View (cartoon, rainbow over the protein chains, first blue to last red):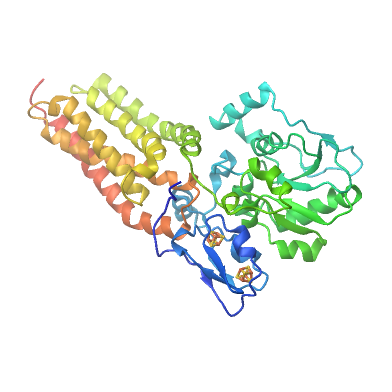
Length: 101
Length: 334
Ligand code: SF4
Ligand code: SF4
């Protein structure tokens, strides 16, 4: 199936190869196959696919990954301009994302 | 909600959905009484689980729970339901409700150690955005194994020795996924546009030159373009930015409309120009709103797109509306 891509070169994802131990956690949690392991190290294979969900950084035991996690939701971002708070997925009650289980 | 006492017997869960479950799911998708579509957090049993059986962790949104249990036929396992405030796993993980703290808490509260002898929990992969596996291990002694993204793969995942294939790990966004989301886009869009429809109808009662069919049809077309056509046909529409996709569809629709109404007859060029600026902008805005429902848009990306697109959308809609209103005020015929 054709993979849907959004804007390229925008993700805040950073991987510090020196801290990486090659445990593979990031590969397990990333829902878009952003990482690959070559030898004993993880690499960012396709940064353009990153949706900044933050799962990789949260689950990297050596804190080798940094990403500013956030919601990719226009109405949440607009709401945050008015409220002055961090954008949050307020329609989450509506079960907005499909495929979750 | 979180006062699950440990002495209660573990509730048995059927793996077949009843008619009421389907009806409830349909109502939830259309936003009817969705807020209380929850189940009680705590421990549940599927089949005849014993101390060796796997423990699957999930959220207390009933649609999520149903999607899980209907895929567990023939399996003996435990289900540990976290209190996510009635929100599905992925959204709850993003908010931190399906998170490390709640999981560690629930491990204690549910007394899971009394029921199983092993120290392993299977979490849906999408929960990883809220749960730190190594921190859970540190605070509770339980190892988190991330299962597949979709519940339908769980049995195979377990059969293969808790190994997920690459395909099981990837989130996609199929035609069906997008179609299911349409009501969620359409209902709020209709609610927001209702005042405009009412305003147009009311003004027709006292204005001499009321709004015409083209206006109603145009607004309806713009809503359909942004909230139905763009989401459903998403990959087939040119562009990556949602606002651009929505604008393209809206422009096509408006052009067709202008054609269908005979170029709005002679003397209404200004009106058609106004419509060509206004309706694609409405469609573009609604399509931009769909970003929140997708499975692949990043915060940085949407931010960038909005900074570029919103001024254009607002400007175009404003000028378009002004032209359309001006066209009526200065209309010579009729
Ligand atoms: S989770 Fe961290 S340490 Fe493990 S492979 Fe990925 S980057 Fe390396
Ligand atoms: S933030 Fe999410 S999508 Fe991006 S690389 Fe990490 S796990 Fe993958």
